[in-house]
Image (cartoon, rainbow, N blue to C red; front, side, top):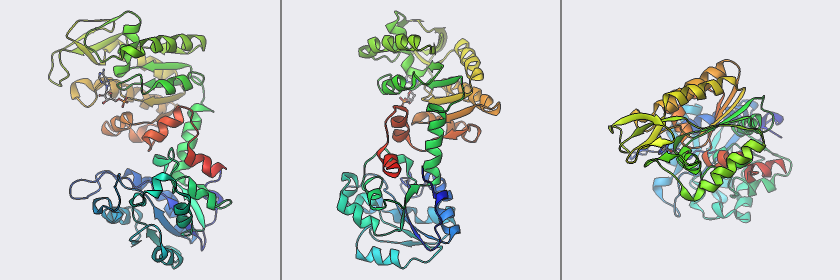
Length: 395
Ligand code: AMP
C-alpha cells in the first residue's frame, strides 16, 4: 500500500482528490469543516516537501454548472484551516486550468472548481479523467467519502499514473482502521450494531460474523429479532419481512460461536415524541400502543459488561432515538463504555452515518480510537466490498 510517505513531492505537483463536500448554511458558510481539517495533513506534507497541490473535489449534487455549488464558497474556510492563500480555477479541466497548474510554484495550492459541474465525473468518463491527469505529476487519493464510487477523479484518473499514485494520510488511516477491526483485530472483537433497520445492516452482519466474538444488537433493529422469536413488541419499529432473516442471522451466529447480545429491557413510550409518557418494560412484553425507543437499564449494564471485556470494538448505529433527549441515554452510556474500554487499551472504531453524528454530538469524538469520515464508504467496507477508489491505487 503506497501512501504519501513513500513519495518526496519536491518540485512535484500533487493532484489530490479531497472530499470537501462540506455542509453549507443559507449564507454559504461552512457549518462543519471536519472534512477540510481531515485533508490538512496530506496537503501540509506535500507543501513541506517543497511541492505544490492541485485540489479537486465535488460539492453537493449539482445539475450542470450551478453557482450555489461552486467551491468558491469554501475558499475562505480552506484558507483558514490550511493557512495558505489559494489560487482559484474557474473550471476543473481545460487549457486555462492546465496553464495554471503548470505555473504552480512550490508551496502554492490551486483549487479546482466543482468536479460534478461535468457529468463526466460521476459517469467515470475516461477522457475527462485524462484531462484531469494533466494537472499533476503524482495522483493522491485522500477522499474516503467517495472511495466507494468509480468516478473519474476517484478511480479512473489513477490509470494515468501507473507508478505515481498513492493514498493520502486520511485515506490510509481509514484503511488501517478498518483492517484493525476486520483483519488484525485483537480478540475479543465486538461489533455494536444499532440504528433503525435490519435491512440496511444485513450484509454487514453477514460479513462480520466470521470476524467477531460478540455482537450487540440495539436500537430499532432489535424489534425485528424479538418479534421473530415470539416476543410482543407493541408498536415498536419492525420489518416483518426480515424476521426470517433475523432468525437465520441468530442461527449463523451460533454456528460461528458469536455471542449475540440483544436488549432484555427497553424504555418504551406511548408516542414517538420527546415528551411522551415512558415506562421500562421487558423487551418481549411491550404493551400495545407503546414502542421501544431506548435501551433499558438492565440492558445498559449488560452491554457495559460486554464492552469492557473486548479489545477491538466496532460501533455502527445509535442504540435509541438519540435525536430526542428522552431517548438518548442508551446511546450515551454505550459511548461512555466504549470510551472506558479505549482508555484501557481497546481499539475502537466508530463508522457509518448516525453513530458518527451521535459520537460528535455527545463529545466522544476525541475519546475513541478512530471516527470514520465516510458514511457509505465505511458501510461498504464493512460489507466486505473492495472499494473502487482503493483498488485503483492498489493496482
Ligand atoms: P441508521 O441510519 O440505520 O443507523 O438509523 C439511525 C436512526 O435509527 C436514528 O435516526 C435513530 O433515531 C433511529 N433509531 C434508533 N433506535 C430506534 C428505535 N428504537 N425506534 C425507532 N428508531 C430508532
